[in-house]
Length: 500
Image (cartoon, rainbow, N blue to C red; front, side):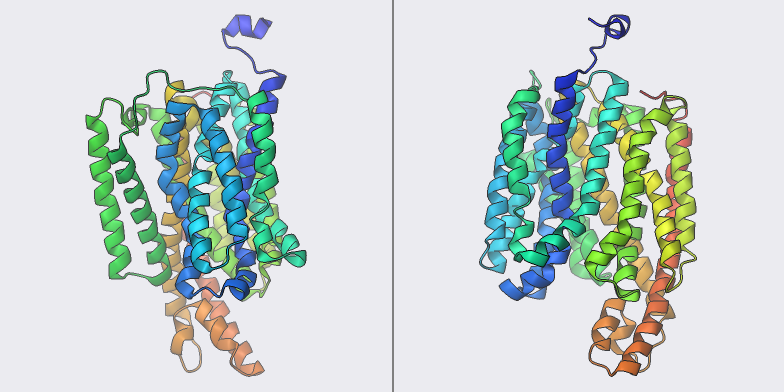
């Protein structure tokens, strides 16, 4: 036993544990890649499968819907049957469904395989985070490990468009799905060698009613929010959102009655856990809304291809990766709430820079987004560590699932709320000759311009671009307020929380 272990009573991680972390980085990178790589493949996919507009939306969304919907169930299932076992089952399922998706012969088949791929991927996220808690007992080492995990997730998101663009230069659209197959094969080989098994020895059988309630609540809520962001206030998305909230309330009521609930609500009685989860959701509201309009600005106002737009976003991703790695080091010298709160206040400055962006102002846009992601990266490392580290070991899977759901829900809320704000500003500001569909959205303006002669198209795109930029400016201000709220929560609720 090392002196450090003798002094603290906590076993330090060795070579095997760090190799285990490397193995856990594989599915983390893959999930992030799968969430961003398909955007570039859509035009190629449309040529091969000829999906309708509705089918295209489902091809894009069903993967994320299934991941979000099954996270709670898979988190608890991992606690019950074994986290390594569930990870390996999920890895095999991701490999098989990736191949099925790559060789889909119709839009309907691709939607079905993407749904299955999402369910399989839902086994990976909570398992990877919970296994980090199993591997690293020392809080400082666990913090560094989660920082690496967060960096892999952010790096995968940034690399998705770049890798997808490179593949599509030489191969057919299905090649973007085959990225996961060799990754999962490697994971299946190394996982038994370097990853320990852990399960809750007192876990009982899953309550199937709770599984159905949680799935219905999350799917309806996120579907309603996304549809509100796309189409504005309409009966169907509002009804879906209300139904999701009501079913969620029934789910919470049922969990309070069960002796062994699917979701342990007592986790929310841990102040650090609850505060970190709230900060995560609030911060991702701002990030989701800003990301939507920033990517739209790069492609529709500046006229960049998806690949070029993705490359312009790489600096922000690198900033988030670097800040995630530095955050645990800085948190050793200062209180965790102070580090997290100050990083989020830095993000406020970045968002305010977006409020002054004009057409042609990509340097200011990229600089602002880089500063924003300093806060996002810090939160990804310290906030996630706080959520997972605050939970008892037997509830690690549930805590990890809540961390992932918090990010998904915050992003969906941000897209819905700030997407609506940006669109509303666009409609108020835009002044285009003849009006028509171009006054409804920038997307419509781009489509209309394609059928106009050169000068008329340029005039339409210029006016629409100015209005869209005004929407981005308004979102920058709103996101600055949201980031400030997150910072205040961190600086107050977590002010006495020492770092790991």
